[in-house]
Image (cartoon, rainbow, N blue to C red; front, side, top):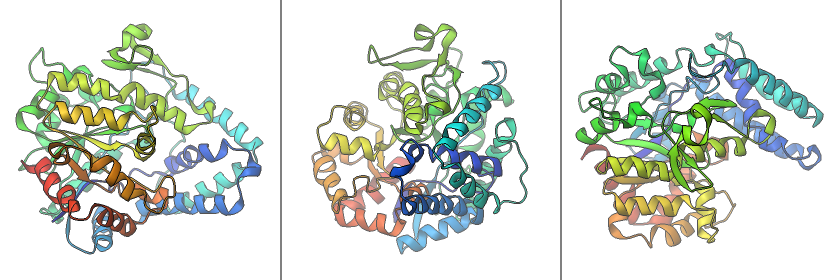
Length: 441
């Protein structure tokens, strides 16, 4: 049976009224970095429609309806692996950890808005935000503050636990944690993992998204000197972990944040303790709201907190950890790698880790047609997948990243058709055999 090893069933509990407006600003930054005269009305309208469809998907559909939508697109019964995320500290710092970021972040947004207004596109973004907000009639929260994601984490757990009961043999969710919340739980983060993850529990594996503000070697995850670490427990019980392994994606939005553990230090190319590079381990980021580039903002944090060299340190200590490095570096990195561009380093770094560590996997999710080529998927198959050694091919998995694909104008039925056409007989390997081994062996 087909297994989608990477998808999301985020609902209206995450897309709050305030977040929808904020995300409208956020996801528009790249468009707005261009002179207004270079952005045609058709392009703006198409982009607006994509963002609205994405938001509307979350607002109107339940997780079960999302599963059924995917099933219809696949044209067959299938197994979904929905990944949850803990966004608690995306826009605010943990209490008593760093200076309160609320004021500086709000000031940054005001400054950004003034610059956007100069480009004459603020009205377009406001219209987009209003369209989304009109669909949500029960939220009343400030643009920036603690309440933005209040209860969203708990609601995700409820949503996916309910869906697991509704489709027990078709849905295998992954639980999400943020190690900075350890003191919020009676038994800490590890206690939550033991409570929710296991063969007789609602969740099958663990999802980590470190660019949201913490290091892969955060002591709660990595340090077992006082007993059992998160990684040690997962390694012992072969609990699968999926991480974000791409330079595209999401991140926290703070100007400064305390990082406990290692960061990637560009000048040396190594993973080093954060306090070796920054006073008291408080990272002062170069890119923020006023930098006007969402990709630069996220890439800085993705490199610093999620570089493969940091994960190498994790795997060196826990060599049998079952780890999925999702996205195989991401489509933009893969396109660079195909051309021999040295900045496309994520894919070869992941391949090296898969060669060295027996339980490292990767998934081919969100591989949208970035360069608008007719046979882009065939090129990925022929030039990246096909040359891999057989024992590496055994750990490559299919994933969609549904419903993120909507943002890239990529219908799920077209996406799966492209994979089946390009991979031929090998598609069964990446969509059935390999993910089954990752999830259940």
